[in-house]
Each structure stands twice: as C-alpha cells, then as structure tokens.
Length: 111
Length: 114
Image (tube, chains in turn red, yellow):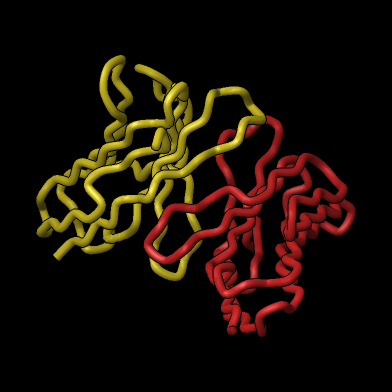
C-alpha cells in the first residue's frame, strides 16, 4: 500500500463549480499537510499548509484534515479556467524531512 | 524574482554521459531538497542538504547519483553514466531550515536521455 493515495482524474468541471480534491494516507505519524498546484512544465506552487487536524481557508481555497480517517481534502469555490492544473497533496511527519506526495489530480475547468 | 532558480531547464544526454543539474535556493534560504518526478508518478524525495552537509540522502539511488551544496555557489545534483530510466523532471526546493517551514520549488530541469 502506498503511503499517500490520490485519484489522478482527470476531473472536468464547468466554470463556477465547487471542486473537491482529496487524498488518503496510511502513516499516522504525518502531521503536516500541504496542497501544491502544478501547471504543465512548471514547479509545484504551495497553495495550502496545515498542521494536524482541522480546516484552513484562504480565499477560494479550503483545506481540511481528518486525521482520524487519514483523509485530507482541498475545496475550490467558484472555480476558474485558470485553476486548470494538477493538484498535489503532500505530507510529512514531525521528524522526517521528506515530503510524501500523492501522484496528483489533473483538473480542467471549462469556460 | 528571488525564487528558486534551476538550470538548465532542459538537458539532453546520451546514455553513458554525465548530467549536472544546478539549483540556487531562494534568497535567505540555506536548505535545499531535490525531488524527482517520473512520468505518471508523484514527486519522490531524493536528498536534503544544508550548506556543505548532506543531511538525508535516503531517497538517492545507491549508485551514479550524488549531490552537493558547497559553501559558495549553487547546489549540484550529479548523475554519472546516465541511462534511459533517469529521464525525468528533477525539482529543487528550498527552505529557511526550521522543521515546520514551507518548501518552495523551482521550475525543474527536464532530463532526457537518448
């Protein structure tokens, strides 16, 4: 079993829709959870950064962490064509240096 | 733009040649991480370096791969005697060094081995 599982999609939604992206993980030691956005042929760009369980909101983006279920989510409200990208979840423990990434979910927002 | 700078953006090598990938961290950052992204795969951690020190190289292949971050100059990821399986995007990230600090990534080097 991979440590971090993420549905690769592709996910296609109309402009203005609410998008839900998620990851599951198996390592209960993970404490830091991140979402990165990656455009084609570019490096990952940090979107959301959370510690332990709970919700965090930043503009149109909301990140949720449910450690009891080992499940994290990213919600995008009022999605825009410019949100079309691959979204990567990443996580690590308190003691580890390495980020453990999901494979990424490809999102297409159509006008 | 004081972001993480990687060069070259694209590198083509023939089998058996050496590849050198460079990374200059974000201004004020002294910690560098290298990740590899294979087609259809997620980003995989390779190595974590501070100035003149390798802190964690648990993700580095045992042979042909090495990394350094000298006191002066960029971090270098070196791949000797490249093989086709080394073809991938190699990303560098930097941080200020505290355990909970965020990582910021460069645009990557796409290595193609012919």
